[in-house]
Length: 301
Image 1 (tube, rainbow, N blue to C red):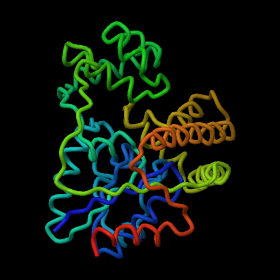
Image 2 (cartoon, rainbow, N blue to C red; image 1 turned 90 degrees about the vertical axis):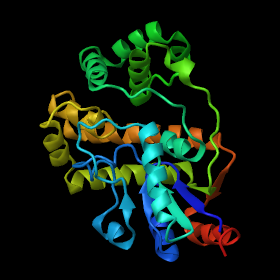
Image 3 (cartoon, rainbow, N blue to C red; image 1 turned 180 degrees about the vertical axis):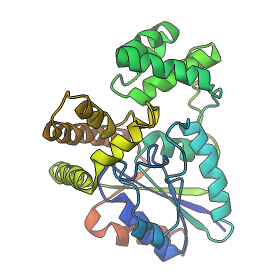
Image 4 (cartoon, rainbow, N blue to C red; image 1 turned 135 degrees about the horizontal axis):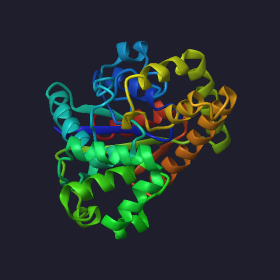
């Protein structure tokens, strides 16, 4: 029997979780989260992690499982997710992956190049460089270690820049030299759905979500997390702006506005990535569930 992986993705705040949960309920299956920040503990508000109610409706893997200081990567996600999927497929032919971390989704569906395991010493060095000299300092060293990747990397994507430098330092060769781009063979079929909203509606949903996060206690959550240390897991939208507020660089209203703006920028990048992927099936939110079910039924009756 064909094993089917249903990927529910799309830009942040587009409604991925609700669609994934409804599909998991219908097909009596489980969800693997493809979100590079939801995997950490103590960050449910700022990462828009599945609510207790959503988790009661469908089991979610890789949500709130790692301490804030833990290292994680797309390569590790590929390995972990494949192992989880094998267990899910022992009792059902359908499994669901939900998330907007596009490198994680791509790693699972297409595979990722083998990279060296980055040591704690290397990670701490790069994190110290980032904290002391900012992203420009990391970019300057990446230019020395890997001028090829330095030219093409998204220089606003801190995680990608940091990862490239970590791997270059750990391997002793440029990160770009280790990237083959070869697609791995998978023993399952894949359907990749993305929710598509008009740009203005999406941005409105993002602004509203940030306001709800603040009302739910994002400030307290961020303070508690940052008291534990300066971790890469906190170097992300929402927590970076709250950190600037705590340092007195923003007022709270300014921090909120900046979170909203930076989240909109992030959503644009997600859309750019997805629009390049011809395998994505775009669904309008109002009848996304019905359309997804119809397409799935053509593979798994």
